[in-house]
Amino acid sequence: MKINSNFLNLKDSYLFAKVGQKTAEYKKAHPDHDVIRLSIGDVTRPLAPCVVSAMQKAVEDMAHVGTFKGYGPDRYCYGYENLIASILSSYARKGVTLEADEVFISDGAKSDLGNILDLFSADNVALVPDPVYPVYVDTNVMGGRKILYADATEANGFLPMPDGGVDADIIYLCSPNNPTGAAYTRAQLKAWVDYAIEKDAVILYDAAYEYFIGDGDLARSIFEIESAKQCAIEFCSYSKTAGFTGVRCGYTVVPKALVREGTSLNRLWARRQTTKFNGVSYVTQMGAAAVFTAEGEAQIKENIAYYKRNAKTIANCLDGLGIFYTGGQNSPYLWMKCPNGMTSWEFFDYLLENACVVGTPGSGFGKNGEGFFRLTSFGTAENTEEACRRIRNLLG
Ligand code: MLT
Figure 1 (tube, rainbow, N blue to C red):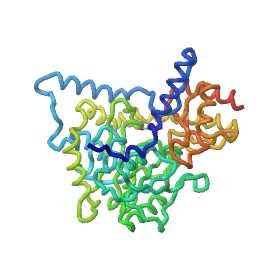
Figure 2 (cartoon, rainbow, N blue to C red):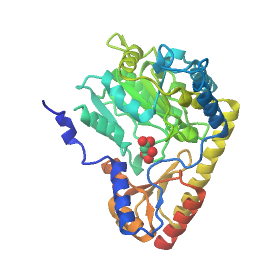
Figure 3 (tube, helix red, strand yellow):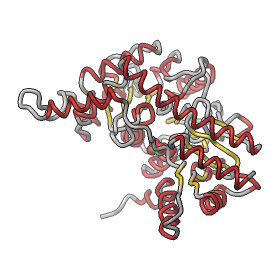
Figure 4 (cartoon, helix red, strand yellow):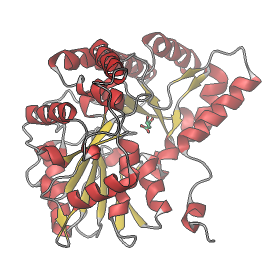
């Protein structure tokens, strides 16, 4: 037996696992210190009331012979009809028309972003921004694929644009971006769509943070851009939109117009999912279906406004300290420069040891992240204010 030796080319641990481990070690050594975590983007607001009642009703359905559900609908990877209908109506409000079997329900964007690579040959070249959500890089390393990087730096506002001289097959875009919080305009996305079509490439568009967009010029779906259905797959998640990080539900849109080498990628994904995946639980899907109702949208918008107030608290703190940062406007993340020329991990240790605040070192997202640090606005308002008070005391 031989292992997949590509795994040996991965960094020794996943970024957030390393942050978690260092935090746990610190807590063990200082059990009485009150550590505030503004690192992994995990939500703190409870589920919206209408989601909770939909899930309670679904549990009740499971308790009776007449309403009990086993495996999902025939083509279960597509999800229950009411859930799909609510997703289609949410797209329709963005001016995007989709067919029901272009939407696939999953347990979240992270798994689908990794699993989608089953569809692509190992000799395809991946183009990923740097810095970037580590999952895009690690899953391609596992598959032994060549990776090219598009530099996201202060100079380009952390929004790299296509370079016609670079030949890529699989292009990763995340907007609003994790980790930098930068977001592409429609015109910028159109340039990426044109590039992908010219190169016969496929864009894997991570829209996990679309609900944080407040600016009218920014697209919330790549499919708002003309011709995108011919070259893009979109990954969406209820995690940050509706507080589902612990519930697990997302959806991936593979348009039927997306055809490569004469083959429909929609058909390949359906084949992959029906073979390897048994769908998302009925109770979860019923909760998710409540998210895009009028009542659900109003309730989740309150949660998003709460996180945006946290982002403003952090932004005010950094402004007061004169520290450069991006994000926090159309995104839950703030991407700050480490003070006094510290490296990302030096600042991580400094902040943990002197303020008991945990963030995410920018270098964990790629070489261009060195010297940067990511703070999340997903904490509670109280913790966010307290963390900012400590940061002001330390750096002020
Ligand atoms: C993050 O903090 O970057 C995200 O929460 C990680 C994830 O969604 O998997």
